[in-house]
Image (cartoon, rainbow, N blue to C red; front, top):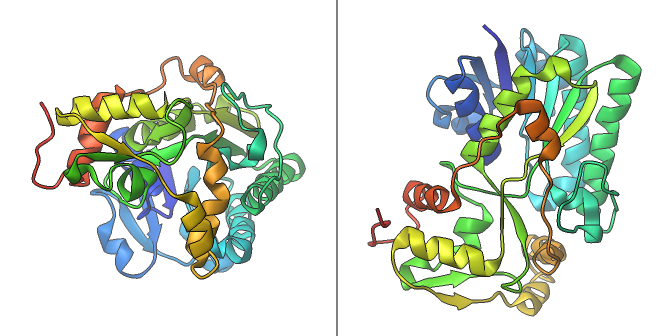
Length: 318
């Protein structure tokens, strides 16, 4: 039986990946801290470990064939935490010989994001977040070249769905759904890349099973769902069975509030992703896997709304 350890198994991506690996018959260990260990998906073997403890992390990863690196510190902590944790994960992968799998995002492309981005699209450090993500991926690329430690990046758009909250869908887009309102953070006619987490988790498991066919350092784009604001609105209306009003986001307010609230400042900096249309080309992943998991958007939204109880007293349409 293959073994995967999921770092950050109590988070959104980690939980989805852990469930998918278990579904495909893997033994799954989930690394989490404190009380979060008790919230892991059924069948996951909880491992208490701190990602800043290199020796402890190496020990936790012993016996793993795959390390899924779903560690995701708070936006406001990225500068101090992302690279030190990445260095410890790199050490664990090298010590154990496991394949390292990393959820990527579109931040790396900076303000140059555009529709149909392929894996070789230029990476531009337009923001601090882009700079940090590029540096982290370069760290793993150098390790692959020098030590032959395999890293596979599966890059996706904004996450939604699954059993864990705190994504754009529940925090903003459908935060007023029980009042018959959809909130869209940008122009309604621009495409935006989304990833339904149960599909993305399954794609991680499928990619892990084909890892021997991949290069020591390789990246794949998960196309997911590309939706404009109008398309999202129609899909949600179909999911809930009633019309919705549309409201926008006051980014000037967020920028002003960001002078006093660091998290709002960090989110406002990344607001360009709602003003520049973009999507990911998933051809390379499809060529490897044959079939890439893709739930119909309306079905996915129905499930997400139900799982996270986003619709108050209303019931999702059948």
